[in-house]
Each structure stands twice: as C-alpha cells, then as structure tokens.
Image (cartoon, rainbow, N blue to C red):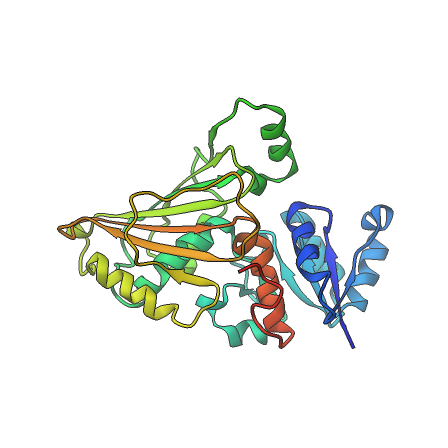
Length: 307
C-alpha cells in the first residue's frame, strides 16, 4: 500500500519541486488540497490526520500553525521552513551530519536552510575532527539564485531586468545564523554575507580561512582529505580534487540534488577557501526534504533525486 504524503503549500516553489520528484513514484500517494481547501483549517487538519507523512512548504508562522493542526495524529512531519531548525524535539534533516538512523526514526524533521547546507557541509566535519577551531569567528560569503527568495523576489527579478546583484541581510542577525552556529558547534555566530544574483537557481557558499593564524588548523590538503573521508560513499556529496581556476554558476542550471565541495589552498598553505556549490531548490530545499522522506519511509535514500 502506498504511503500517503500531504504536501501543505504545494503551490510554492519548494512544494512544486517536491511534487515533481514524488509524483512518478508508486511508493507515495500525494495528498494536495485545492485552492479553497488550502485556506480551510478543517480540511488541512483532516489531511494531517489522514496522512502518513506531511511536508510543510510554508512560511514560518504558518508552519507552526500546521504543527498545531497535526496534534493528536500519527503523521510524521518534515518542515521545509526555518520555524523549527533549532527547536527542541526536532531532528535536523541533514543525513550526512545528523546521521541517517536519527532521521529514519524521527517523527519531526526540520529541513536545513540552503545557505547553512553549504556552510555546515564544509565546516562541521572539520570542527568535529579538530582540524578547525570551534572558537574562530568564521565568515560566510554566499550568492544564490533568486528563486530562494520566494514569489515576491522572483517576480521582482523577472520584472526588473536590470538587477544583477542584490546584497541583503545587511543588518546582520540573519535567521540562518543560529543553525550554522549550533550544528557546527561554534562558540561564536559566523558573520554571514548573503547575496542574490540574476539566475533562477544555483548557489555558491564560501568560507575563507586564514590558516596561518588559526590555532591547530590543518593544511588545505589535510582539510580536503578529511572531507573526502567524512563523505566517503555518499551519492549526494562529492569532494573534488581536480585543479580549477574558476567555479561557475550558469543561468541554464537544471534541477540538481547534488552537493559539490572544494578546498582551494595557497601554495604555502597559509590560506584556504572552502567552497560549496549546490542548487538552492535541490539539496538546499526540496531535494533535502525528499532525501529525509526516503529515510523516514525506509526507502533508498536517493530515490527520486536528481543526481
């Protein structure tokens, strides 16, 4: 018998991509409400109570409301919003860091943010290994396609053909920072500098490292090999070793649930640039939700992913 999956917010960018990944799969029976029912609390409550799994593709406040609607049911929830990423009782949905078994057995899973996915993939394993200090004031420089900003930002970029670069979060204290700090086990919140570029999808996240003044930091090659070992066997995460003079994001990027990592180092080993490239709508959103759903349902972790 197919597992019933209620996608609350299926008309949004993340929801549509989850539907696209799950619709062809016979293991799942998708429950998607029509326009009128989406605004009916009773219809939504009934959907939660009849589903095996629910994926919340909602704004933060609506996601908290949805969890309340699901109270008393047996539904297992994946929240793609940022409402529960550092909340007690929720499992962080990053299998490579949190552990596949933890997600497989969880009833409440919070999808990582897109930017934190890149940052944590690079930094968390190296801090755990003692190759990077936990008490360093890290900086995160990142650019994303405009699709991560929701319908309003998508419309703004598509209506105004003159926007090439949009820096934001200039007041600091961005909502992604708490999960970066917690799941990398850092003493200080990283300084996060995000920007949006004139591309629909795609993301590059960079962490520059002045290794020569970082206590006990490993060399660039030691850092790269540690990441290779940490992600050994992963079908989703690839740590690259080929020399490159540049990394590109293309406007023609197709949906992808991959996560690609690089460590670039100065010849004398004094500096390094840790770089992650991913699809903000893939491993940064819908792909991560599907990966967690697969684990929770006892299925192949990568089933239905674009790899």
